[in-house]
Length: 106
Length: 185
Image (cartoon, rainbow over all chains, first blue to last red; front, top):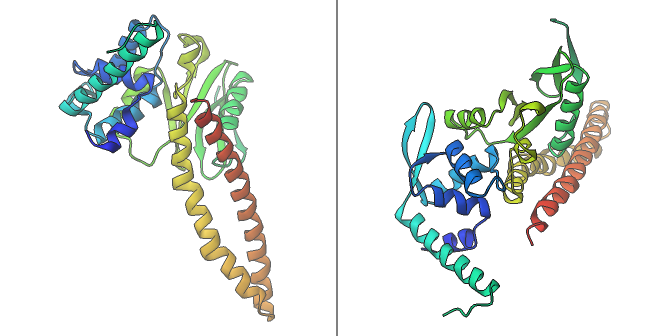
């Protein structure tokens, strides 16, 4: 992972994190939005413009790749680089969570 | 029900939020946006008064069919494009929660749009001003034959117009950039 990717995606926005997380299985934009809404109990609704912009940027940066088209909807899936970014972010969030609970971090 | 009216109203590239509110107010008083005619005409048709949310996106012509499908999936009706702006609407009665009324749900993406407007609209405008309008104004102002004098008047008017636009848009876009950039703490 180069420094540019690290600078942009660590830390990620909440929307960015959920989008990348959901793309571990191929999905299209609106499907991701529905899934995220369900995962967050309706707290996080990702807007259409935000969704489109994030997907385009992540595709450009090689974090996700176009998988196939279904009824005019583009399905994406995470790439190896995306997986690496996601895992780095998960470790950061885990550390953050543990510290917030007053637990010791190894 | 085919009564239409055409409105002349000028919004600069920095006034998209005002434009959205204005279109919503029109809808509430029974006028539904039919199409936009560049640079600043709006054609409305009579409708029963309804609360409709209007939203504008600014793109660099990069969107393809997937873009429009995504907005359709979210329940946004695409009205058309005008000078780089894409117009969408959704009836307030169809909103699924307050957040559903936004096309940009976080500050990062709002900031991205403001940056696109600055890069592809404000910077070229400023460049044209300094590279063409201002030098021509200075050149014709230095001459005193009747033709040059009338040119000077035209370029003086243009200079004022450009300056006004650049200052207005520059200040406002900066303020928007700050609003969305600083909220990120």
